[in-house]
Image (cartoon, rainbow, N blue to C red; front, top):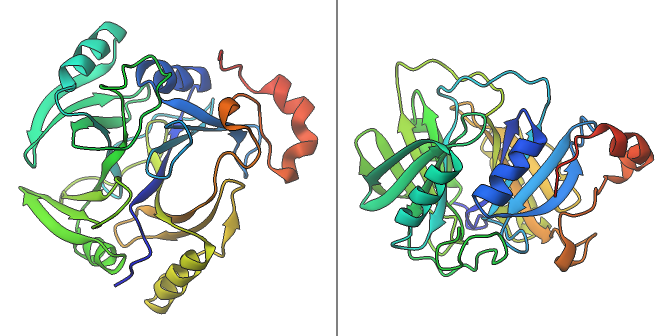
Length: 309
């Protein structure tokens, strides 16, 4: 069993409209946009990052907004619900806030003994807030009182036809079974970064998901540094997984592999962080480009949709 993984690093999804996506996360959820850059493989498309003040691993939601993308179809073989932690007693505030802002599909629920509020993003993205004891510091300038604000990720759920092999993979990665409710098994990393939980929802007869707007593209797990990442990569390859070489993503190094249930996993380093090319006070303000796309700046600044803030 590995001990290098410390919980979630980030979750990356697809969207249709960059401005709408930016408004939802910065104004409705009160997160900070910590980076405005572009997709490494499609530089005419933004890569937007939302998080706490510093972009701390375990708090980072990222998006590729493709203007011409079709809507995703939910199903198995994907991340189902991305869950954020909020302070105990705060869901009443959030329900009222979301009702005023027109956030869709509000559904209160109690699961695993926790109060949660399900809601949808602009493209039908599946989200929830969960009340939790969490001492992580929130972004204090997002228009949400700090005693109500999002602390970071609480968990993510995987929807699978058969969860057995993915459960074994997560156990190999350092997760342990901690609870079960109906067809959902809960696994957690002990002593992690706060974003410690993965729920496996087994749906044997469900259709496979179709990737599109509102779908999670991949889910990333955090390791401290490149040395720990290489240890994880070797262990996964020795177990038979096909793992990519290490890829420099400017703000972290990444490796990717496909899980038995079809979900794309990434293992990302905590280093170097989002302040490597921007002062902390101004994270996410300027358009930052990977070096291989720097020559496209004039074109991209005219072509990319203005975000409005």
